[in-house]
Length: 99
Image (cartoon, rainbow, N blue to C red; front, side, top):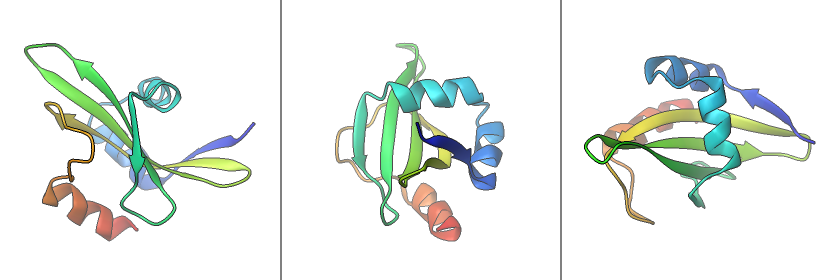
């Protein structure tokens, strides 16, 4: 079993987006979509949330190694994305400062 590790950036974003650790773990364990991450050797996991009137998605950037699973970032995306759709530039800029 891999150890789950949250980076400081992930913890800060969880607080900013009001995502609890249990909510992040739920998205991690039951993603609707898994895509290649924007950082080397990462994956992006998505789980839809919200309501029909106010939909959003919980996104995680994760990096796996042999012994641990590192949550690099977590955020809420307003609305719904399509598979393979690029992330908005403001999110990409933020990640570039972290990776």
